[in-house]
Image 1 (cartoon, helix red, strand yellow):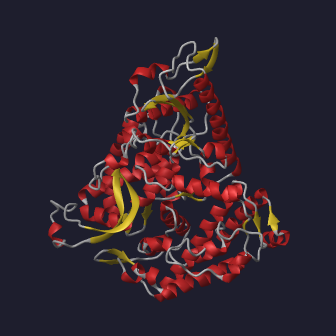
Image 2 (image 1 turned 90 degrees about the vertical axis):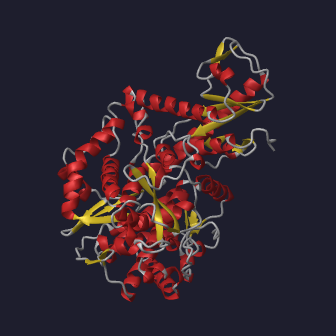
Image 3 (image 1 turned 30 degrees about the vertical axis):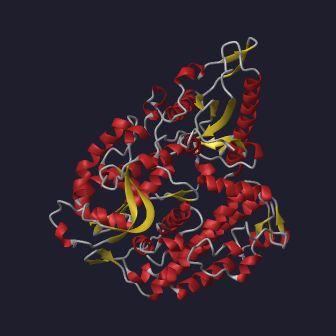
Length: 593
């Protein structure tokens, strides 16, 4: 990697430039009429705050639009992918990936065309002090956009904002928190304190902190992807063997920067001796098997026959499989993907091999997803990729195949991130929604059965109406035991939608309401069962306690103290599948406190 970019996180001049451009961009933002109107009002309601930050996002895009045209999209990617993770990282695992994705999605809006010089390591662009200033300005812009999106989400959760002194600087994403979000710590400009901050609200700040903690976990790709469809995966990531050699059908994720010995990857390659013994490469991307059959298991059910996945998800998935087949025979290109997330091939090679493999790749996907609606030909696929821009809010990568007159860049990380973001269950009700709900119940039961909490003797109580005094009481979606305690689970298969990801008020509120009401209902059921251990068609008298939990595919934001409270030990009344899995996989003999 280019040393000048690799070391910028330690460069005082670069940090100063980021701070300078942060000041300049914010100063331009404050000139807009909507900003002045909000400033004169001083305090904004949650609804007004949400509209204000949405307006800020649009205005900032307008301010920065001409700066994006300074370089071509390919040149921006060349610089951004060689910039260290520390420049984009923050307090959460997801921050670095989100900030990188945000930068690249905006960079892709460039219409400029430039010629690249070919070097020993692929295409190259000039790198000097002027380049670093452009990168610093882009980092400042991305930093502001990230914070605007964060503040929009706070407003959607009920947060009010003020331009006055009654703000909560520790919980605000402006001003004092602005610089620390980037771990290389560009200094926070004093003028940022005149920007709106979140009004003191312990309830919202605490709920948001808990929400971030619950999401700040690493999971398998399959689990992450299925979570967005309202399903999730029960596989324990720690029990999976290393899969870095999986190339043909792989998803590429951003990892910690590390030194990698490529000798095993290049084993058997005719030019493997070019890599000397002991030589290591600095890598930040790694592959994991996609597991198509498991990913689309639900979609193969009869009720799902007419339900397809998003067109953008289709383009990204095809790119991953086409690229994977090239990487199988181009191991040095695979090493390049591990370093930069993309690889480059000659135009005729891509058109030739990818064109030949296109029908085969589509057939492979259809073996797992029969209803796949893919472009009919490779040419139509290429055209669709070129026209696909993605989205900056919510973050969805656009075109993963960048074509120039001389070469093609296949961006495996963009295809991976784009697929995960675009793979979301459609907003449909009726039989399709019922099928998904039943499927999620089975997923939760499979999780329980894979642990020591499995209880086959009482499985007959699951998914059947329990009656008391001749009246229907409830049915249990998933069931198990923990020592001498009975675990009963109410499953809510809530899909992770684009609106929820974006932080739209109604999406946040409706999802929270669903979970809060479900917890209140399930607590009532547990109380009734605990008080009446023997009913018309059940007998629970042999258990010491009845533990209830409402399980969702992902951790749902809520301010409800009841939903966030402990049902037993470290298990919350409202828990995600990951949280339930962690609870079940701990020592069942330990005493709950």
